[in-house]
Length: 332
Image 1: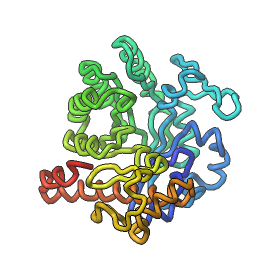
Image 2: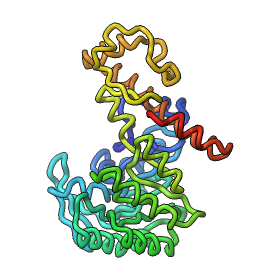
Image 3: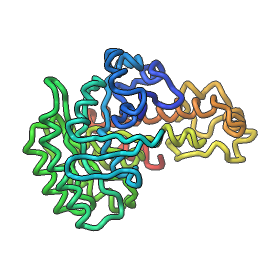
Image 4: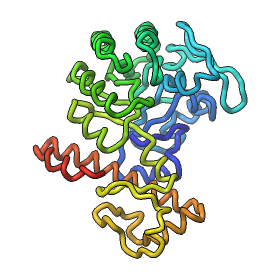
């Protein structure tokens, strides 16, 4: 899922995402409620109509902001009080309020409010965050209106026993799907992979498994091998705005001097339609001059790269060609 935090995937429109083939995006409850506000979006008939998007929308509950805005929030068992990063006003978010806001937004999948512990944290801190997430779980479910799909979020940090306990707890509740949270929050890859490999198989096979915030191509491939179905990450769009393009031969920084007079692309198999009419030298010129077109072209390119990756993952699973796919993306 491309990330459109405030109802917009940066530099591209809904028509671009549809043309690439994406069917679902991610937005954020905390940010959308600050502006333009859930009441306004509801009056427009929901976030789909407001942003003219024909696909699905999943909203993060605000749980990530519990971690990322830790300096400007207060948390207890009732919920979280945030100080707005826009004007300093106070915003209270409880499990019930988060689900209510997501219902007003009219999204397809609502994430339950959780406490996401940062890395590093002690085992006691990870256990306390998991306990609060469990405490809030049934409150999230009870606030959902009829037909509102809510996903639960497994926590537990890097501790396998906590992950086992949390996975068992959520597997026994009637959530529409389950997510692995608290991953890719600063821990090194060698600690991330065991958590995913341990936790994913513990989740019910008949429900969607979602790994939150993970987006490096190799991380996605590893997680799919573990049984994960859904992903989101800002990488393809954020890296584009930092002049980086993804290819099968690795990532390229378009500010590199080697592109200054280059007429043809290094990896022709990883040049998609937004870029194929332009030379590397021209794209480098755009990003050096800080022209918005440069960021847009690289964003479209990277989104195409990720859309192809996910399409080829589905094909490899169906056709039994996983080993060949792994080899194809070995350097990505």
